[in-house]
Image (cartoon, rainbow, N blue to C red):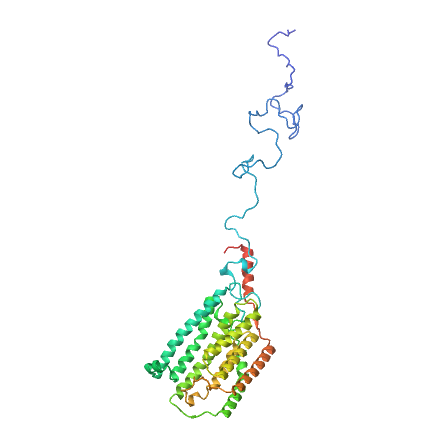
Length: 427
């Protein structure tokens, strides 16, 4: 029998709060109580005795979490640094370089705004587009006027030199002898008004040259030749009546016959068209563009261009001035009603070609004599024919349903806005 005091005999374990029951085999793990399950005798979340983390004095970690909410703000306007190193998020502020996606033409930068109208505009209001500014019309007027005066002066000097004019005599008397050289030079200077007006409109307003001809962007040749074909018989009758009332004198062959025939055939059609492009086209749009209301712009433009057209012909005879005003009024009316210069150009060409038909065969020294007494009441016949022509052309235009107003800039604007919406406003 062994004594309990024998040190060689193992003693039973003393009971205690942390005593573990003896294991039959130290290499076999303790029974599994399930993932996350507490050890027997312990509650959830409580560390086992002897295994908890010590909390140093003064540290907030491990303490109770306070309510969420902004803390007091620092004097510099920033909130206190939060638990994770970031302050509270403030309201959204656009970053530098950020801009909203444009939805209208006014939202676009000037260079991306269409130079062509995005709303339906008639011929005279055609410059009223998103890119338009009032000073552009003024610049176009000054530029075209200056170029025309310079070129006409040079052309006139060359023409007089070709005719062998004595410039000293011209300086003394102030009278310019008229010969075929001066006639052709004058026609050429007026014909140059076509490119002058087109390129000026392009440079100042941004609309390509073809848009000065019509609201569809070019000459409608079938319509133009139809008007020429309809008007030619009417003007032949008018010329016949005029020759019957006042027969031409000294009809025959002259030294200027051949150069005048060539000059009329080659330059008169372009001279007539040049006057229309400069006065009815460029000047008409310059004046009309200063008025937001298209009807007001058309009315003021028609009046101004009629007076300018009369003044450019330098007539001192009241009957001739009445005729020039009537001619200009009909031209502006047809341009507005048809949406282009074709009809006005056709009337001008037919009138000038037929009225100059006898110039190669008569004395042309008084060709530009328009002083008082050069006209009389018979000019009312010409005005009557003009009115008939205007009514007839307007009727044909309505029958053919010509486009008289257009908005060609709409497609460009829609494409620009769609691109900005898809890719962002990167201008």
